[in-house]
Amino acid sequence: MTNQNSPQAITFSHLGIFATDVNRLADFYKNVLLFFQTDSGKLGTADLIFLSRDPREHHQLVLVSGRPKDLAFSLINQISFRVPDLAGLRTFYQRLEKIEEVSDLQAVTHGNAISIYFRDPEKNRVEIFMDTPWYCEQPLREAVDLGQSEENIMASAKKIAEGRPGFCLRTEWIKKMSKLMGYEDNE
Image (cartoon, rainbow, N blue to C red; front, side, top):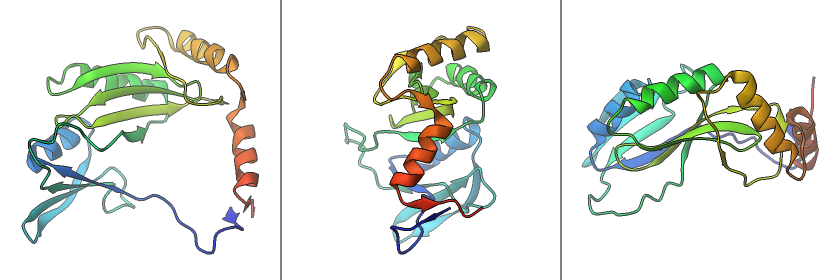
């Protein structure tokens, strides 16, 4: 696909996060979310740790020392990671339930996704989500019980999505957005 309205293609690649304790935060992302450390080092006085789960990306996260310890509010709204299915989402939810440093763990549906949210050790909000086959207008956030059967969870998410304006299949929404954004399918 090419975007006819853009002189140059651009895609999102990675995110840098300032940390008060860069090693502690790196350990969390490596041990809990299973990131791999690709590099580390100093740049001036800052310690940097590069993390990735994609061998094509040198880093998806770079953690940088220097976040003030007395900073009461994280400027990061959320860091989001996609998993392919509900089984993957449940695996991470069960893993996160056992981690003492995790706070504010919640499972929700947005209609177009089923997500878990939590706070990492430095109180950054993290989302792990799976796409559903539907689209509905956002924002939408309703609690779900990941202890239910997959069929019940998906039926509940679909019912919630169907009740929202703009409900359609995700494939239809993607076609609509592709046209609005000026993309053409070159295949």
